[in-house]
Image (cartoon, rainbow, N blue to C red):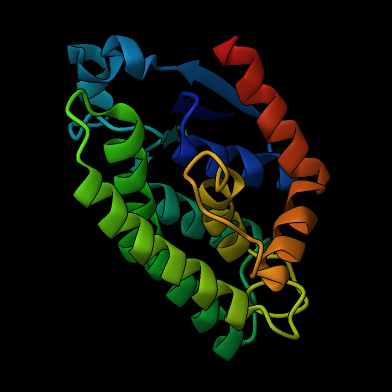
Length: 204
């Protein structure tokens, strides 16, 4: 059985969404990052980088959420288009999420919500970049149900968790109707609802 080390985080939500979509059995090992459990020697033996999520498949520990999505989509055949052109799109979006969406949305979270020394200039700067990302995603979803076309893929899963908390980050979908429609469609999926409920239970 898969063992998932995680907590109530953006990247753990990605993996839970995938697991509930595919119906794969897993054991969840909570790593309370708010209490520093990711820095303990026991967890550093699992992931020296001290980050969640991590999956143990019985042989190896797998890290980095988008890499985990790609590994398991390849293994299961779910969420990764077979057509080489569409598959390339999925992989491109995984890199976009890891290099652009995640870091910039995360900077908003840090400067506006987490730091003990707020920096309004930094908040404004990263909010502007993230707003441009919202516009970009909205445009790319024009005439598409999901980010790569008509099929729901791991690219959608990778992009969703940060967009789920757009209100919390001060980002608006008012002029992003395509993105808003996509967001609601992903949110309504059974796998998404189960993943969110699961995290709510462990963090309550």
